[in-house]
Image (cartoon, rainbow, N blue to C red):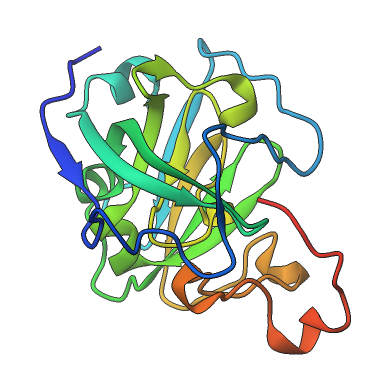
Length: 211
């Protein structure tokens, strides 16, 4: 595996004003998962880039590991109201992976697909600007409960958009809701605007939680 050779800090992070409204700080990294954890064999693991691309890609773990790796320092904000500051993630940027596939001009959105059937949607420009397919957290490989071997990290939105166990990046012309977005979670998920749920569902479903 190549050593990380770039360091990126999420824009807007400073000594103050780093905790969005309605959030509390924790020094732990809670595990929240819908459904059972998938059983993944790294020897048969693959990630696929498909949809509106010039060249569909399917990479095994060795091929993925041979890509350029990046280290990102970023905060993490969960929709269940906890925030963890200064997490160091290591992996491959979405932009580097998608560039190898050649996104078509009409590609505007991304759907991240995962082992276990989970999915989440993002604007392509957001995914390309700050998305990281992370294998390590604070210098150590992710635990299975945190999405090993790859977790998508998108620091500027709530944590359910940082999907665990990623195995596919689909480029699309139009937007389409992912797993939690279909179940009432806000489509954009901006923690600074407290975009947790669609307003009409918040009153109806106060029990909605997850990441």
